[in-house]
Amino acid sequence: MREVWRAVVASLLATLLFAAAIDAARADDTANKQLACSMCDALAAKMTGEPEQPFVFRSFEPANGGSALHPSLENTGFTYDNALAMMALYGCQRTAEARRVADALVVALETDRHYHDGRLRNAYRSGAVIPGKEGMLLPGYWSTASNSWIEDGYQVGTATGSTAWGALALLMAYEETNQQAYLDSARKIMDWIHRSTADPKNVGYLGGFFGHEPTPERMTWKSTEHNLDVYAADSWLARLDAGGDWTHQGDSALQFLKAMWNEAEGRFYIGSVPDGNAPNVGMSGLDAELWPLIAVPDFKSKADRVMEWTDLNHGVEGGYDFNNDRDGVWLEGTAQAALVLRETGHPEKAEPLFATIAKQREPGGLVYATENEQLTTGLQVGPNSAPGDFKYYRLPHIGATGWAVLAALDINPFVGRKGQATASSKDGPCPPK
Image (cartoon, rainbow, N blue to C red; front, side, top):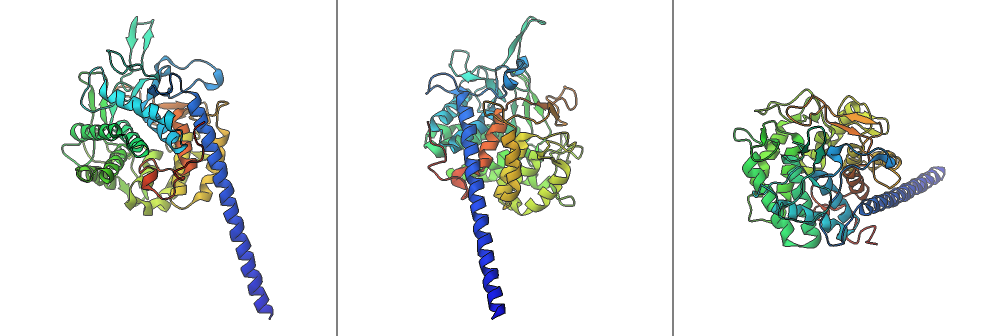
């Protein structure tokens, strides 16, 4: 009889513990959705102009009303950041606001001042879009020192990954609205990538173009992150457009990604060196480790090994660094890690990261780019700039906020809500106000 009672008590205890775990998970999910809604409210509050007017978010805001941004960022909305913000707004069911950004991407594609071939620039003039005879405006500033208008070579150029993110955003917009213009624009973008950045000698897609028209400089290195973006966009298009050649085109990117896998270390290389497929072994990048795990079904089984390597080489107190010098928390990447952990079956490991994100928000609700005043990446802004000059600073960041919303809502931006089973329900956690 004593053994029977022990079994009964053990079973009851297990039931109570399981119920408590479910209650805790529900509480975490509710808190995350509330965090997402608050961040979407912060994004929407930055939008100006008329309700139906296309809009480009400024990527970085001055910190806490402090000193002005560097002139090169004062009116700059990066395409990648705007794609994330748009996806986040759709996730929160802020449909009207999200469509303004989607419309801006279409305007940018159709009214460039020089290109009419399907490419997007890396950045556009932020604010409400007022199409004029000169087409979609680009960021820039007047330099009193040189008495001339200055445009940044990276911002007016076209990185393969940034352009693919424009396609990913438009594919989500199409699935959310069924507006044909968004699907047509995504097709144009990916057709341009296939024509213009495919490596003619090896598998994979080159880095894109840097500098001003009409003859920007071709980047001959290849990025794991860029090829992942291309693969994801092609795979998404293949689901929507069975008559296209999207699977074949995306397979070239997939083969490159497989070549960047380091079996011995259990991680991905950041990409290749110029003019070949030899891996760049001199640096690492957090996004190159994380994104394949949620964008490529074949790579999900590698998650535990990759996260173990990532924890050792990118992990810092409270989150993750961009590269392996571990000099601070990169909030955008920390949000990416939270989403990956949720998507690969470790939601309990994601919760401390959400706590970090919640603490690293400016008074208006946007997430800072970094916890420290600046953060190194090891990357260069351009081919002729100083090594390692690409840094993040402690400024409110649209991109970091977008990733944080997607992570909190468990939305995978590489497949969209219709491509996954675990994302927030169609009616959404925070309907339009």
